[in-house]
Amino acid sequence: MRCSTDLLDPGPAPVLTDHADFDATVAYNRRLWADCRARTGPVFAHADTLSTVRDLDAIRAGLGEAKLTYHGSSYGTLLGEQYAELFPHRSRAMVLESVVDHSIDTRDFLNTQTAGAQDSFDGFVAWCGRTESCAPHGRDVRAVWADLLDRAGRGEVPAPENPSATLTLSGLAPADPGLPGVRRPAP
Image 1 (cartoon, helix red, strand yellow):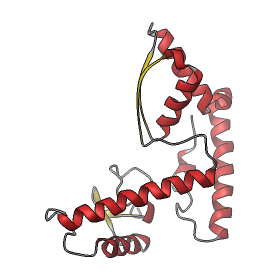
Image 2 (cartoon, helix red, strand yellow):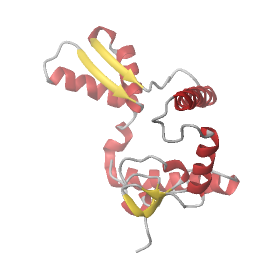
Image 3 (cartoon, helix red, strand yellow):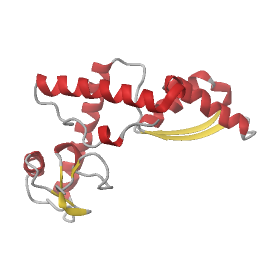
């Protein structure tokens, strides 16, 4: 995929707070889609998940492997799941972490993801409460997190890799300061 870096940085606000943000994001996505399609050319029409699954099988065959051994994370779980559905007889072993269930609708997907994230956060809060080496041990971890979110929303959390930049609300923990979620200082 080839897309204009001018359109990618900066993108729209990652947290939508009103209908105007939503409309701006839709307009941005349409501009980005048109730009990427124009720059990528004919292959753009074949950059969907099922085409990628078929490409994965072609790579397997090209390597002379009878069966696929696969590791997928996040979106990669969709590739693995759909590969196993399309080519069950060609699947040897798969590790799928951060599994995304492609069989449910968007509302159920978001509810499932939200419940999983909440369960994980609740587990962290409990662990921190009993583990002295946890940085906010002995404090109200939920209040610490809420304060961090508020500060990030105001642009007051320095990016660890680049203290002259700040983390955005959606980017509290990026490993790479070039990733979305980091406000770069003005030139």
